[in-house]
Image (cartoon, rainbow, N blue to C red; front, side):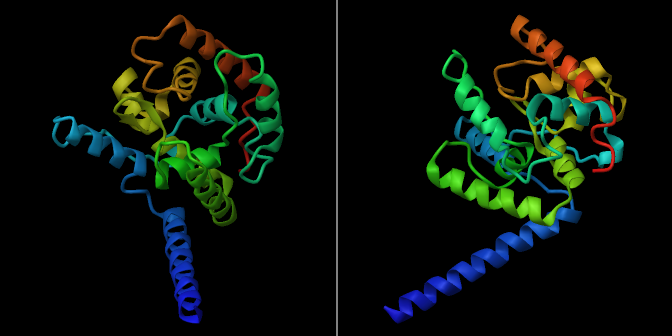
Length: 229
């Protein structure tokens, strides 16, 4: 029994060292890929599509239009500056709202979504949620807020095979992420909850309605909201 406990301690220490080390490295280096991209590649192989290309291209925070960063925060996590990984106010609000909504909304923060995209799998289980909270805590502890937002913008899925804002800008608007306009940024951000269903290249009435909502939230937050991250 004592030997088993010792082995478990060593295993936990190794797991802690590996995960903390990976998060620390990614504080400075661009992720070469993400868990979600790898899962899509595996699904494509199983479906017989071969090695499906994903136009994932990293771009530094300074190379992304400020309106794009603001649009993502306005759409996904308006208390991004204030919380420490979990938005408890948003969670309570979502629980109340979902009692009256046909389309339930989540309350995951940008930090949680970054952790999920980078390291985890898609299925909603208690185990995955627990690991997601662990990585969320690591990101908030070891990365500045601007780095969290920078990585999220580069790994978020903006379409079935489009990952990252640079690939999205080139695919949908034939321009770099630095040149995105407010309306283009709001349209991309509006598609984030369901990027496989809400098509930026063929916007539905619902997506246009979300785009208008995001634009209004951007105006309310103001262009200075993300200054000094």
